[in-house]
Length: 313
Image (cartoon, rainbow, N blue to C red; front, top):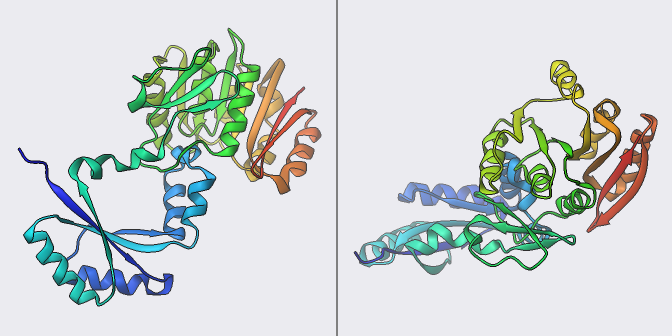
C-alpha cells in the first residue's frame, strides 16, 4: 500500500489575532488545529507535569514569543482543493511542509538524544535502546511521551548528578514529586535496593511504572503512589516508618520549604536529602528553611540559573 502523504500548513500570527485566525479556519471546515504559542506551551507543560523534566531551556527559548496555527491536509488533489478553500477564507499568507505519515507520527522524536549525566549515567529514549552504550556508563531508558525537548531540564540534571554521587548498593530511596520517576529509577539502576515514589498527580503513577519496566525494575523493588505529603498526615506517617538513605525532591521552592519540616523524620542516620527545582534567587531561602529543621547543607550545585541542595542531619 502506498504511504499516505500530508502537508503541514502553518499560519504565523500575533497573539491578539490568534482567536480570530482559529475561528476563521474552524468556520471554513478545518479540524484538528494545533496552536503553538508561548502561553499554550506553558499550559501544556503544566498539564503534563509528569514529563516536564525532559523539556530543556533551549526549546523554552525557541517558544518565547511564538504564535502560529498549524493544520494538516493530504498532499493530493483533494487536499490541495481543501487548502485553497481554507486559504481563501483565511485571507493571509501561510507556509507548507510536506510530511509522510511516518514523519507525522514520529517527528517529535527528533527532539531527543541520549545524554551523558555525571560520570556514569546515560539517559536514553526507549526507541534508541538498541544503540550501544558508552563504556562505563549505566543506561537509563525513558519514554518521554508527548512532550518535547533535546535534553533533561537543568534541575533534573543536577539531581541526577547527586543521585549518582550518593547512591550505594542496598540503599533505600524516597522520591517526592517523582513525576516520570527518572530520579528514583536512576537510583535503582545504580544499585539502590528499593525505592518509594510519590506524586500529587495520579497520572505520574502509570508513567513511572512504565519507565521502571523499560529498565527491568519490577514492583518488588519499586512502589509508586499518588498523594500529597504536605496534606495527608497518614501518608507522611507511613513514609516515616521506613527511614531512607536518600530522599529526593525535584519540585519547587514553595513546596520544598514546608516539606523541610518532614525531612528529618524521613532520613536514616547518615541519610542525604537532595532537593532541586529551585531558581537561583531562592537558593538561600530554601537553605535557611532546611537549617531551621536541624539539617546542614553540605553541597550546593548550580546550572543555568537552577540550584540543587544536599543536606544531612
